Length: 150
Image (cartoon, rainbow, N blue to C red; front, side, top):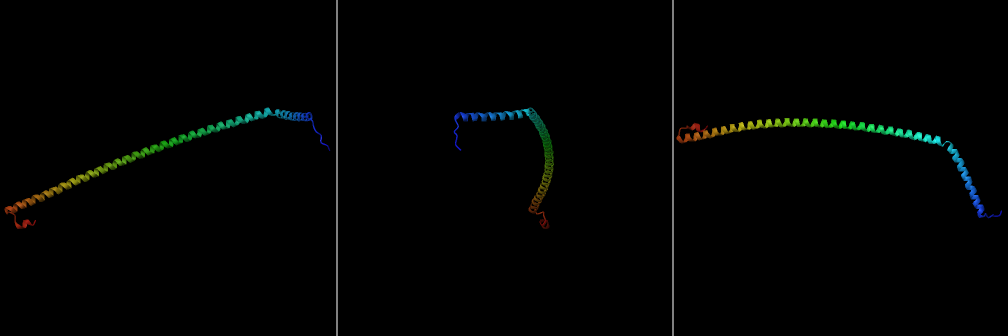
């Protein structure tokens, strides 16, 4: 078998025939695809619209749930703050009662201490006066010996 050399025009013609065949196949395929294209496009648009509707519904549900949770958190926070305020008021009331009680106890102790000191001073003054009187009586000689022992 001998090798036949192809000329430029032969090669160009073969390339043009190949391109024409490819073009014919592509046109045939496009025509076949074109027949159902409108139906497929309409179906895709319908599916996209349904998807968008589902996404919008899902987003609305998410926003509603977020709002419900926010309101629930705010209500819980308000209840917590109210409970804290009530607890603080109770602590302050108890502290005031305790301070009042401590002040009353302290005043009572101070009064008791003043009475005790007054009694001690009176006893001390009485002993002092008795010593002075005894000393004076000894100097005058009016005190008897057994009275010294008292």
